[in-house]
Length: 449
Image (cartoon, rainbow, N blue to C red):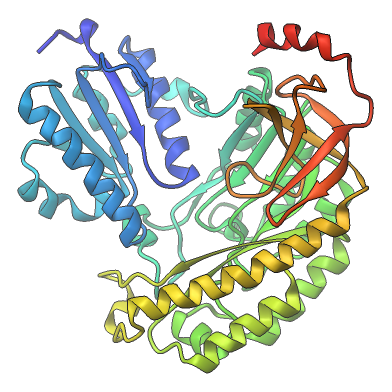
């Protein structure tokens, strides 16, 4: 084993954007303590591996376990010196996993970063609160506004792994946003386990609108995007701020999970189909042209063919701009685990496929209707022969992309551009810059990127 000054750490992140933020904080703390640390490095020169795991559903757990086993084998063969595991899976199953995979040197929960740092003889630096080493492209970042969740959804194990809801003070979130802008960030995605609960613990009221107002005043912050809102008791005053502030994207990610009342009741979602419909009507009325992203869960215990048809009918009626789906996973410790997991796996998969086929048709029609329009896009990367960009209706990695021919046009990564949409399919659009630069400038782009 090499000494601390010689250690090379490779940090691997699995799961959601909230996990990614945790890894970015960890990376910052390690480097501040003099540890040579990289995030998901392609080089094979690290002697210490840290795996930040996800434990949300079966597929995520399987990916996490397989990743741990791969590195456990490397540890056993002497290819690495130390293997540490942290994150949600470790928080939830540490006792069992430590017996099953003894090659792991230590397991850490979601709130045990100081203990992990001690393994490198590094103290947690409180003065670094709100700072992190970005692993995303330099022009966008995720911004966590709270931790944990107080909801009791029957299918969800997140409160078991992340604990109760804890809001970050408005001034702390704003300070981090200013720090991100100083690093070149122009877009932030606000994330939380549950966005709309923000402020209830700190201010004894829902304060999402106040937070949005404060963030919208941060100079240089061009796009603010909202992720993971809960529909029950949604704070409608947040919509007023969204409509009034041009740098708050007309975009809302609100996982609805289902639309059949019997399923919603068993899921403990505290909202009905009609209440959901009225909420969606209010959102669209208050913010005309808003892009709504949602997630649906199929195959929850007791979901009948009629329930699933109600879900399909609701999606066909609402025509969400963006929609994802996943099959129910029977999670120990949740109230749903007390119900019989009575929908066969092949039925769950078939229902998910049918739902996504419906959404693909809706998305294709909505995109086709936008052909010929001029839209503002943010250029994310150069990939093959195309610059890949996004509109304000699209979040990175999960939503649609806008492709611009890099052989004919030059754009700068991290810049905004006005483009005219020329063609569209179900999940991507093609476009041309309204004011295209000379193609020979692409040599300058190479130097920039």
